[in-house]
Image 1 (cartoon, rainbow, N blue to C red):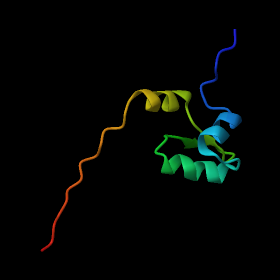
Image 2 (image 1 turned 180 degrees about the vertical axis):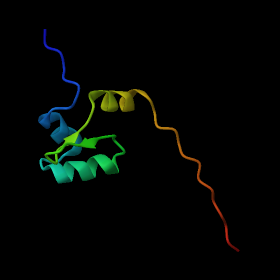
Image 3 (image 1 turned 90 degrees about the vertical axis):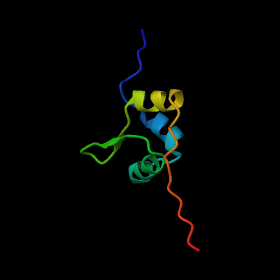
Length: 70
């Protein structure tokens, strides 16, 4: 039986972020609001559930206050 790991693989991180290098991946993950942790070796760790849950649960729109100056 082949069970998926708890975190994304290097190939999956590359596919999600579009980048190969850890610092670029970290930047891309932050811009996409994908929760992650940085390992002691400097590589990002993304829990598989973080990606799976984002595709199932839509992000609620944030209320934005608008001010019209006249």
